[in-house]
Length: 375
Image (cartoon, rainbow, N blue to C red; front, side):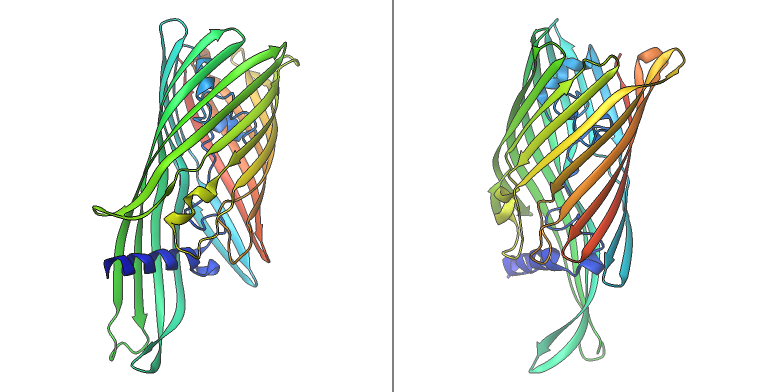
């Protein structure tokens, strides 16, 4: 009976009506924010493979200098249009915290906490069930609060001025807190039903990557993540089992124009390895994303140059809706303001995303504000 109730919660969480759920982007196990630091987000992810503030490529860590501490907040404002209905929602995220320091002259160790998938929504819709041969009308309400987080311990080494590489170990944790309630229209005859369930996630992975300079002014960054076992638990019981998604990414970055970086990136993530964590109704796709961006010198502030960033990205989201794949096109703009004589940087970015699935359209605006200290 306990497994039946848990399976029912998983099915409802996967298939609740979109207008009530409020977003295309939080289908399935949630929205993949990309584990981007604010600087990389300003280029729509194009700088992720070489950015020490983004916990994507452990080989990028030596680029932080002697040490790094960064954190950020990323609220998202969404508007979904379903037929003649418009739904507005807001989600607050704290997607990346990054701490690291040099070991000896060429080594670097870092700890990062980031959001792999973010999933928060509410659903309320009318339904009917058959009780003792009679069709009875009711209202089903579902509330979900959850995320899958990635805790990474990374080690990197600066082999030369032209090559740095790193290795990382990942622990994936998190939980979905789901509350399912059914209230019957005829409340004098039928009582209400309620089920609260906390499903916790656990998994592991390893990753590795490098950043190299094969020819003057052209940096190549590449990384991969190999996922291990992943499961969901209710209390001490394992409910479902799957695998952590594998990921492969690579980028080219050109710095031949003084004060500027021009980057392109490709990233592929095998989200289908998570399929068996959910219900049979869950639609999961592997995703390839392409991004391009530029980071260039802006106006000077207190004798130091500010940074201006632009970028664009195209991808599909891993979890579909109603048999349709959710496509996403993103434009980004950002900037960096040096503080404390260059020892700190205040970064700001805005990503404007257009998401579509069938005749449903969602527009999302993600504001990212990050502070990085490099003592």
